[in-house]
Each structure stands twice: as C-alpha cells, then as structure tokens.
Length: 294
Image 1 (tube, one colour):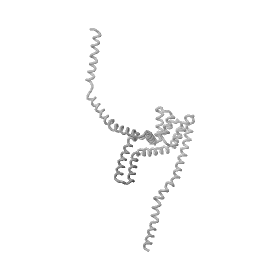
Image 2: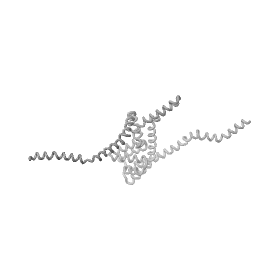
Image 3: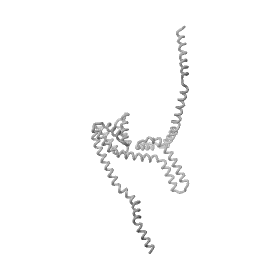
Image 4: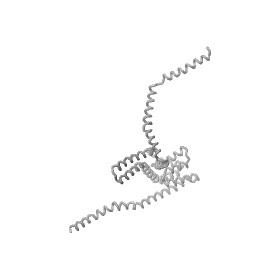
C-alpha cells in the first residue's frame, strides 16, 4: 500500500474518533446543572437589584450638574467615604427623596389654602432633596473634629517612636495600628498609597486633601519640607507636637470663654421667667386677693 494513502486513512478517522469520544464522555447532566446555577446567580445578583441600582445612579448623574457632583464627592471624602454611602447611591437617592418630599409637600399644601402651608410644602421638597447633603456634612464635621482632637496625641506617639529609632513611615504605621479613630485610618491609608507606588509627596498631599483640619495641613507641609531639605524629622515632630498641644489648649480656653454667652440666652428665656413666677407669683396672688377684697 502506498504510504501516503496509509497516512491519509490513519489521520482521517483519528480526529473523528476523538471528537466522538469527547462528545460521548461529557457529563451532560452536571454541565446542565452548572449552567442552571450560574444563570440563577446571574439573575439574582446582577440583573436584579444591581441593574435597577445602576439605572437609578445613571438618572442621578444626568440630573446632577458636574460641579455639584464634585461637591458631593468632596463631602464624601471629608466624611471618610462610608461603605454604605457611595457616590452613586447618594446621587440615586437625591431624586427619590426629592420626589417623596414633593408628594408630601403637595399633600400638605393641597388640603389647605394657607400661604404658610404652601411655604412649608416647598421647604419639605427642598429638605427631601438635600437630606443626603446634610447627613454627609454632619458626618464630615464630626470626623474632622475627631481628627483635630486626636492629632496632638498622635504626634506625641510618633515622636516617641522616632526617638526610639523607628523611621517616619514606621512611626506612622505604629500610630495607625495602635490608634483608633479616623486619624489612624488616614495614616494607614497614606501608607497604603505609598505601598501601591505613589510617591511620598503625593501621598502626604492626598492626606491633606482628604481632611479639612488646618493643623494637619500645616503638619503635612512641614513634613514635605523636611523631606525635601533633609531636616531631621524628630525635630519637626517635636515642634509640631508642641504647636498642637498649644492650639488644643487655646481651643479649650476659647470654648470656656464662650460658655457664659451661650448660657445667657437659656437663662433669660427659660430659667429666669420660671424663677420670677415661683418667687413673685404668691406675692402677686396675695396682692390681687387683698385689693379685690378691699
């Protein structure tokens, strides 16, 4: 037999036999079950709430001006970007809350012809739309205040660590691991930025941008200058820690001086009238009874 004819007869049935064996050896039942499970997971996890949420987020992005989106993103950054409130969810919630406030305001103003109730209805609409902004602003203020209160103690801890022989990044890592609160989280995030490849200067500037505390911004600028000009970081930390303690004491003294003025209005409008009624009330009643009897 011709060798080429033999090879042709050999190579033709071998692929056909392999394809036939592959087709017959596949577990069709298991493959069908896997496909059903994957389809169920896709329907539940992706095509359901996620698609609706994506549609609401797209509507929120379209209805919100880009400058206002940047403002909301800044508020989220100051609030620490809570996992339960991403930017897309906030933008999706604002039109829904505004619509709910509009319906409630319409119900209030439709049942009465009073102009005051119509103003209240408009206020309810605005309140419903700006509720996420107020929540983010309040959370951001609390977070920045917590950072401001923790800053002096954190500087002292970092100074002790540097004087004990650790580097500046090591002192930041020690303060972030041992500390609790938003400042420790920000220090850990700054170190993570350095680990993923960002420069030290960019990481420090990002730390200053994520916060709104003047003392922390001045500290970041001092660290950047010390890193640029080769100044000993222990000296910078010592000076900054002293400045933080002085400013904390000044804030406490300022609040103590404002306290009498803040207490004055409750005294005038709530406490003094009650005292006058309790002290002068019986005398006035006796005087009225005496003059009416005479």
